[in-house]
Length: 330
Length: 286
Ligand SMILES: Cc1cc2nc3c(=O)[nH]c(=O)nc-3n(C[C@H](O)[C@H](O)[C@H](O)COP(=O)(O)OP(=O)(O)OC[C@H]3O[C@@H](n4cnc5c(N)ncnc54)[C@H](O)[C@@H]3O)c2cc1C
Ligand SMILES: Nc1ncnc2c1ncn2[C@@H]1O[C@H](COP(=O)(O)O)[C@@H](O)[C@H]1O
Image 1 (cartoon, protein in one colour):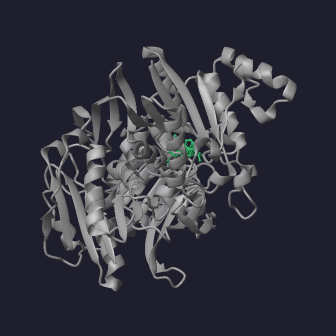
Image 2 (image 1 turned 30 degrees about the horizontal axis):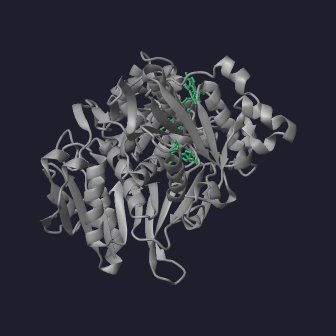
């Protein structure tokens, strides 16, 4: 059993993306029973600075191709290079982070290799298929999150899947493999570069919810941008981070990078406090695996209460100030 | 004049699930969901029409789906599309993204001499965001995904903005290309009332009586339908046969009544709540 993991660099910091570490470890746990191998592939202008981390979390080997032209995502070039790497390695499985880069490249590669691809998986496991040997079972939400589908690619290889950041968190430490990197030889063609990047501006406030244990999220029920301060204050008082529903973001109460849900971040904190959030299926898709969920909502019928462990039926504008007061005293 | 193809899909409205669409067991009754124009595809339509307004273009909208998908093609005509095309055949049923993109790519090739293909970022039923890129690969076009705006439109190139997730990118890119458009790119225009008058009877040929069809054709109201044979497709690559992925299991998500502990709104209740939460946040902040 051999799994290829697409390794990505954060273009702003130059460090590995968390999802690459998460996938390296997931792949490692999938191949372990088969004594299989996890191979990373990296394409870009420079290797990530902290490359050794993917090995500490389960990668066996990293195959890379570097070229100054590849600082930014040139889909055609990236696709051609990764395709050559996959053809040289003949893996059973290829995994991508469901990042904007991963979701740009994975479908191009699946199309070029004429194989199946399952996007945004929330669970992956290997099991026997009709006594014909082990295959990858890929679980993902579909239909706006109303169903959970298990998808397989029984006859085509490689089997391809993408996974969002924060969904498959690794344990504190991994198997500590040695760092083994191998350059990939390739006949690079200038004609693969067709786009000209005129400017690239880092987004300043990309929040990393992965390491956040407490999230206080506000929704449409917060009412205004000014009132969203209550959410920020409660998050601060608890040592957590503020999150939001899409409605709160659309109304401009807070910034888009705080959005949680199907089209925002997927989070699994120890404590999630949903304030003025109804609990739509798209919102729940991003937070329903939180360890403890608390809800404050004026509507006792709000669906959020069906997944909450603690709740108050009432006005957040009255309740949060009282909470803040007791938190200060405590 | 540029030739632009918009890929549009009719989808069940998973965003507005009302009481009627819920079954008694708390799961969604998919058959009861209304069918709508996939939201991002309206943004792709608007992008096409903006380019048409700026430098002149023929905007052709194609959809692969059941005959009922004609509804979104009519909407595209109302918005200002020049031509629409339904691609429909029982042999296409059960297609995953690979098989869908194969059929759409063959249709794009048959139309020919295309400068730009526009897709939505993703469809709200599958949420895969795969069909656009897979069409690009099959027709050999450059692609840029996650488009948040078109900044400059010229005869030879576009300057677009892309949501690179951690960074915002401004990219100059020559024709031809395929772009996938996000809902941030624009606000789709409303149907034009003159176009609505012109096309409200538009439909596929089989829906007209023999004595009406000539008049309908003369008024550009017959929506062409292509079947597998019209596209000279390799049937092994279509529909369920051409789909490498299989669904091995479906579970409906039901909201399970949890072990909810409700607190009152008196200050002593809230004090108790803060006390009970304390264990959780104190542990985290150690
Ligand atoms: C393709 C797609 C993707 C989507 N992705 C996401 C996503 O990633 N994340 C996301 O969140 N949504 C997403 N949505 C939107 C989602 O469907 C809902 O519209 C959204 O989550 C609703 O946000 P809300 O709960 O804040 O607002 P509402 O549903 O309007 O709920 C507001 C709640 O506040 C309560 N309330 C009002 N006043 C008060 C008060 N004073 N005190 C306490 N409670 C009060 C109300 O009772 C109500 O329950 C997506 C939709 C689509 C179609
Ligand atoms: N059956 C189809 N007919 C036409 N366009 C489609 C079809 N399926 C997907 N698309 C296009 O591909 C985009 C992404 O779809 P998806 O990969 O299903 O998320 C959509 O927004 C459409 O532009």
